[in-house]
Image (cartoon, rainbow, N blue to C red; front, side):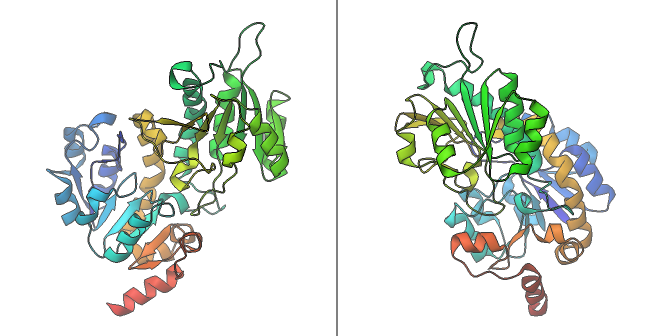
Length: 377
């Protein structure tokens, strides 16, 4: 199979879909890999590294898309990339269709087969391709929250760790998944007073045992959550429902109860975020103030540490890329139910139930969509 790796063009996105080691693995398996020039330069992977690993270096993204049967990316397609795609192409990347109707309409109209990192599952039902970036984003969240709390950024001037004679800042983490547990680790290490919320008792009970009284935990009933958020200096949104929009846990009315200069770091903004007032920002302009509250809503947070993030991501994504390239789309998906769960759009059909529900589209089971396109050809 011809595999293409374009350079990412989202604002300050420096990650890359394959490392030279990944290229080497694919070429050893008999596949042709085309990498856009400078695709990995900012993460420390030069064109010469890719060429030594067996890749052909393309002069432009247009050349990559024109030749590739499967495009391996990090972030979802940007509007400038829409004209480069073609029917029947496999797009293997984070997709995040639910909050972006224009993107969804394009991939439907174009006839792409979109395998989304964020919904590929393993045998235990976990999300192995989302997990590495969730860990990175979770560890970044208290850091960027502490920065946003500084007065120069519109924050309230609270130091999360406090000092002798002054209590630490109050951090509320909503969600005890990969983002939440990693944010918890860093926030506790910074000396903050941390309260962790989740819908179920099992996760928070396990974390309570680990931290042995250094954190507070609570089941996320609306009243308890509202009181904690109103009193928080920093709120970290760490809620994920695979393939669906994030639930809105923070209303505009609740923001008005918070102290001015408090901060929300809405990690799940690429799925809409947990606050009614959240909207995507960028690494160039990461924050805005609404109702007196500083919002940090950067969809590609891990790109701030792009080398670490690329290495963590590609270790997880490469085995699936090898299966897709070696077996072809249909066989690879039929042999792996977890990989099948990653197929969100195929040949003009929405093939993920959560995405179909959130966007009010007709849902076609992925196996049925694959069978239909095979019959049509």
